[in-house]
Amino acid sequence: MGSKALNKFLTENLNDLKSKGLYNVINSLEGANGAIIKIAGRELINLSSNNYLGLATHPRMMEAAIKATKEFGVGAGAVRTINGTLKIHDELEKRIAEFKHTEAAIAFQSGFNCNAGAIQAVMNKNDGILSDELNHASIIDGCRLSGAKIIRYKHNDMEDLRAKAKEARESGLYNKLMVITDGVFSMDGDVVNLPGLVKVAEEFDLITYVDDAHGSGVMGMGAGTVKHFGLSDKIDFQIGTLSKAIGVVGGYVAGSQDLIDWLKVRARPFLFSTSLTPSAAAACIEAINIMTESTELVDKVWENGRYLKENLKRLGFNIGHSETPITPCIIGDEKLTQEFSKKLIEEGVYAKSIVFPTVPLGTGRVRNMPTAAHTKEMLDNAIAIYEKVGRELGVI
Image (cartoon, rainbow, N blue to C red; front, side, top):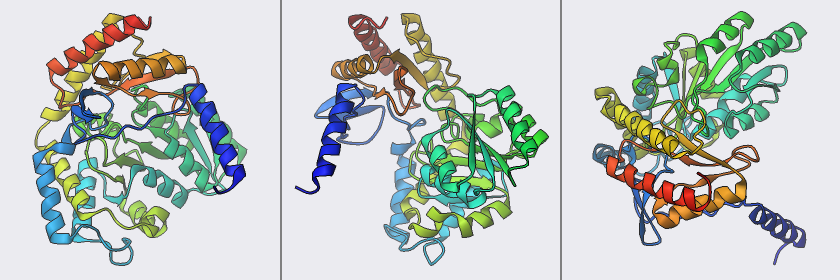
């Protein structure tokens, strides 16, 4: 059926991915995404979720979502600029700005949409963007959409950033220059050298843009990487997601009032997609309330992260140089990585393989994310399974 050319393309390329160990099988969960999940009738210890604080199933969050649904309905009914801005959206944006210590904030339908919309709203073909070589795919796509010249600098290398910023500034080719980085790099768990980046930015008048999707709710007592370094007044764009530590869905940009006013009239995903659902907005507000009332959940995710790292390193696994609870087990070979993940799942630990193009070829890994909802008993069971599978496959 359909185009022969398309069928040929799909068959050949899918078979190629499968032969190289690069094809990803998607599993369906038979319930909530918590510390323990159920797939195909089996309960598994879940180490693949970005639900860092366990908030996706928090009773207060669910109550807030239900209440908002009853008051505002299941959908906003329109884009934000027509009549899809509900009172609860305004409340969410005000709460985010307070949380991030900025003048204002704007909420998007996803973190990906933030980068797709915010970068191109400010940068264009007459500008240049200095981008860390390990930045998230959504940042790369956002840069491409802007039409600006993309200048990649070595990962977290401030000397290379400075050299390329100097060259770009002295070339006279660009009206504006921006430097973009992740706050926490999701595949390795390392943290940006933000003080060094800010120093370079001030020297060469660079617009500063930090995507803190994996830092918000984890770094800076929950307020993020920028707050962790005490540099809230030095960063022009603070990007975050509402789907990881916050536990819901959506994203945001926090910054000056002028910046947010501009994005509300120029960011295309904001202009042309229906608003966040009322239930999502309400749950996000409640998540911020929970995080600001106590650091208990943030403290717990760090405690669990340290425990898992120490034990996997003790067993001989290569866990890289993570500075956060994110704990990669770097295997290298893609096929072996896929087999390692498959065996873990068979034994009762859900830890998915991460291979090219998410990470460079030859650096396949299983990415582990202990959350605040994991108990020591769960982690001990997972560690024992890691040891068993690691020895069977010769990984340790």
